[in-house]
Image (cartoon, rainbow, N blue to C red; front, side, top):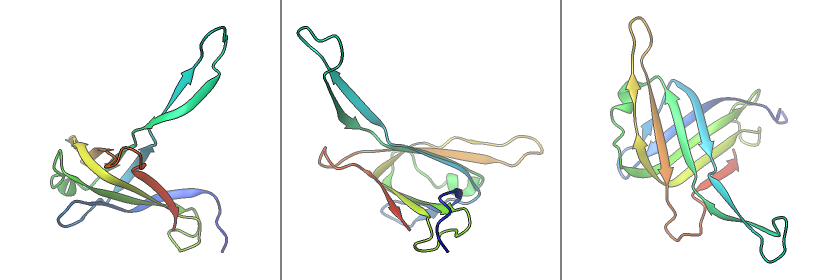
Length: 145
C-alpha cells in the first residue's frame, strides 16, 4: 500500500543511554525542533540582507507521555540516543509505508517533570538537548522506515 503522506501516532519512542534502553509508553506528543539559526549580513550601502546562511543548529526534543514509572528512571544529565517513529496514518510503521524514524544522537536529558492530579492520569515529559562531537555534524536525522 502506498504511503498516505499523513502521520498518525508515535511508536517505538526509546531512550538508549549506555545501559539498558528505556521505552516510553503512553506517548501523547513528541516535538522535535531542528533548532536552525540564520545569520544575515549587509554592509556598505546595502539596504537589505545580501548574504544569508544557516550558521548554527541546536536540535532538541520534548516528549509527553503517561508512563511515570519510565520517567522516574530517566536521569538529568544522562547522555544517550533518542529514537522515535512517526507512523503513516494507514500503514503504521511498515517498511516503505511512509513512516519516519527520528534519531537524536549525542543527546542529553535536560529535565523530567512529572505530575498527577486527583482523579486524573499521571503524566511526565522529558526535554532532551543534543551536542555535536565535531561541531559540524547535525545530531538529528530523519529517515524513512
